[in-house]
Structures are given as structure tokens and as C-alpha cells.
Length: 237
Image 1 (tube, rainbow, N blue to C red):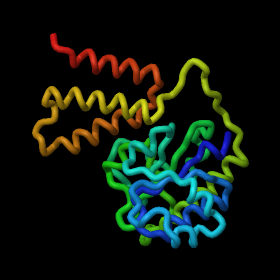
Image 2: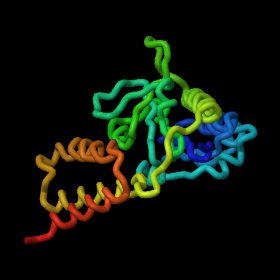
Image 3: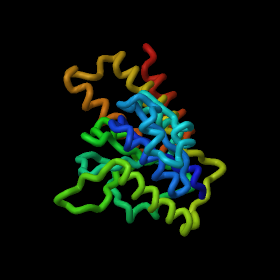
């Protein structure tokens, strides 16, 4: 079990101060992996460095992506934080459920933009959605505060918990990159067959399709088999 398996992702953060404070928050608990997706402010900038205080090296090493799929391609388990319950077939957990996770895997926590959080289209890439217990009449938490709460809980678990799991040498779970490749292949062939009808329903159909694949704990072998199946089904007879 290693803290190097834990990463924090900020999706479209809007305020420089929150980016800097989030870097400071994860360093407080000895984490060092921070990524940002399509940040609104120029990244990096002086205000980000100023609010990161002693965590400037985390900002310097922070990875910047322009889409979610690239940011999670090396993640085994993605946990999306949200103050809202989603009517999706995704497991919902809270902080008290974190001890049940296998911390020998690469786990990423993703946090949404300050004003809007994460959309359903972003949530579907997650294995779990997670709520931080708050006043039910006032659920909104500052972005950097959410980050530090999660970082503190996970840090405590890593210190106290001994892993109950051992990775099989014969079975290797598929990475998000493997799943993305398989899913995109499936979508490509479905588009070639004009599957997405009516056209106005295509976005929700894609959302549901991705949700099916991303919540399954597929092995690398299984993704290769499915990719082969999709490719063969697409061949002309």
C-alpha cells in the first residue's frame, strides 16, 4: 500500500486560489500527485504559486489535460466527489466506505468545478461517486476544503490499514486507457452502422454505453476479447 497510488484531479477549476490551496492540502498529508483538466485561469500563475505556499513543487509537477479521458487513462479506480445523489447505476459511497477499497490499486479522486461540480457525462467514467457528510441544508463545500478532507481520511487509512488483497499474477485489471480504447472501438463501429437513432438521443446513449463499460472491473484479457468481438462483428459478410 503506497501513497504514490493516490492522485487528485481537479476538473475545470475556476479559481487560482483553489488550485494552489488544493496543492497545499495534499502536501499536508504527504501526497504529491495533482492533475488539472482544462483550468479556467492561466496555469500556472503567480496567484496559484502564492496560495500553494510550501507546495510549489506539486504545482510545477502538476499534469494538465484538456479532457477527462486522458487524465484517467492510468487510473484503476476513479472516485467522483459530488454533493448530489445521481440517478445512475453507479455505486454511491461516503467517507466511511473508503476502508473497503483496495489501496494497492491506483486510485484517483476527481473534484468538479466550483460553480457546477461534475456533470452526469463526467460522472459515468467513475467507479464510485462519493459524498462528504455535511449539513443537509448546506451541502456546498469549497473545492480545496473537499480536497483536504479526502486527503486526511485517505492518509489515515493508509497508515492504519494493511492490505487484505494481493494482485494475482495471472489476472491484471484493465486500465482506463484499455477501457477507453475498447469503448471507442465499439462506438466507432456502432456509428458506422447508424446505431445511434434518433440522433438527438445519441448523447444519452453514449453516456449509458460508457457507464456500462467503466463500472465493470474488466481484465486486460477481457478488454482484448471484447475489442476482437466488436471488430469481427463490424466486418462485412
